Amino acid sequence: MDTLVGNVILTGVLVVALIIFVAAASGVAQLYTMRLDRTLLGREAVYVAQSVQQLYLTVNSTQSYFPQSVVLSLPMPESLDNHAYTLSVAASTPPGTDETNLTVTVAMSGSPLKATSSVVVGRCAVESANPLIHYPALEVNLTLYLQNNQEYCFMSFA
Image 1 (spheres, rainbow, N blue to C red):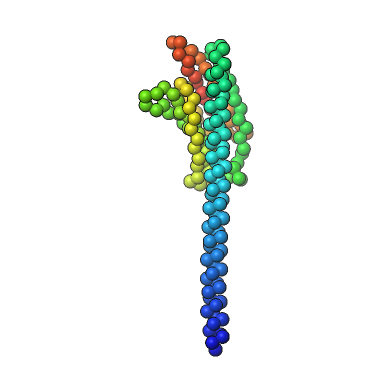
Image 2: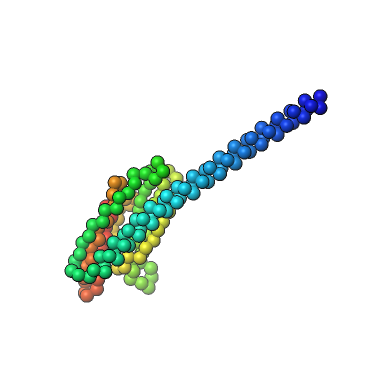
């Protein structure tokens, strides 16, 4: 009789331990997947932001003829880890400066996950539809021009 009671108790304990193990393993796997998705989003945001900043710095450093227009075509993946995503761009000018901060946000569709990256692009007017159509390539149009002996730029995303 003692053996039977012991076996019933141990079987119950093993079942509970198995349920706890499966739940913990599932939670850890879900956290890993979210971290991986956040990393992928962050890489795309940094890729777009730094590419746009590099375009601005390259065109701005030539200082040859005005106006100058350049189109950059950034190849973009259709999905990130088989998830659709949205890409948006926002520009802001902090008080006390005339520099434009460009913030690129990449968000996973149907999920609260998103990543942002910000860069400075000088005196630049930015026009962008949000969210952007980014597949198969994101088109960035940059025009530098002189106005009252001051250099300005206009940037648009398509």
